[in-house]
View 1 (tube, helix red, strand yellow):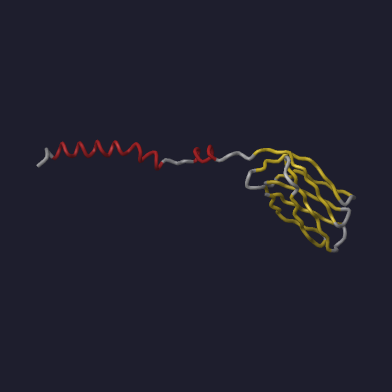
View 2 (spheres, rainbow, N blue to C red):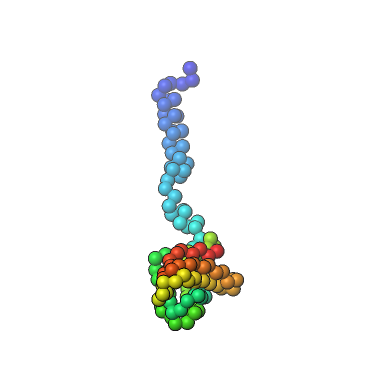
Length: 136
């Protein structure tokens, strides 16, 4: 026999207490670590341009539910510079556009940010159109 049962129990409790420290670090919530490790999206100057096949048209461009640009124009094309958070995964912009007549029409949203090449997305509709457009 290797010692008394009381001594073996004390050693077992000491070993379990020593294992508590790494076990706690493995099972603790990591929300603050995840948020700190996630890189924030950089805010960049973005040049937005809308080109429509019909005019006049009314439009609204939103990002994450917030309207970043809206208006009505008699021209076939309109452009504006805005500041948007653009993560490296890309950005989703919601475009809602309406034309005065009910015929089929198309609109193209062109996004250029910083010194990148222009990226364009097109939507079609009859009288109006609405879609979420993803830009890399």
